[in-house]
Image (tube, rainbow, N blue to C red):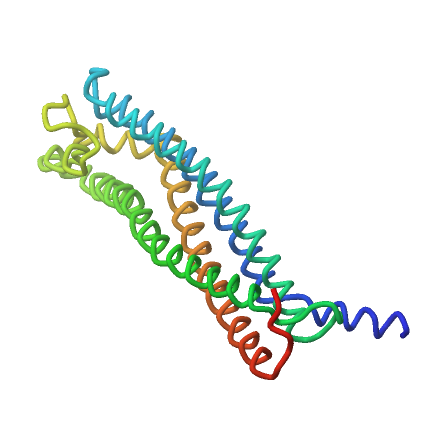
Length: 245
């Protein structure tokens, strides 16, 4: 066997769909976890500086942000390990399907493992769809804030109604209803929107939202690829390829 034929056989055993999904998952989780972690830190700073005067008003929010940041650490670790496992499973099933190496066969354990990965990945995709939807909420909050500031800037020539334009953090559940001031109005709000913290936090939440979408796409790709691999393994099993464990 020449070098060219060997390379072709090796490349034939690469699970390209699983490899693509792994790259998407790594990049999506990196965006979601990295940008989300920093965005939560900047959000706490904005609330503390412009929407609350007493520590008691935002201490609960500070604890929640800290807990969410710990969850982000766990998510990053879990998805890194799980994607490696799915990629390894893709290499196994692809080699079994294409008979790249003689020692690989469709086994009962292999089919059981593939079906388990299908079920777990499907459940993760459904749960991550909820995470994807929730990650849109802070983007919506900052979009409303930016749009209100843009309206205030357009009304600077007629300032009579400017002070009626406000963003109330209490309405979004970020602060308790007795928090003071709890909201920013008029030119105060416009000045908040011009700060570096606002633009940085807004961009970070958008990046985290995009990362959640990329991760969801990766999970759906995993579901398709593992389902296809499982179907072919069952087909190989029915052809009489030894179902040993």
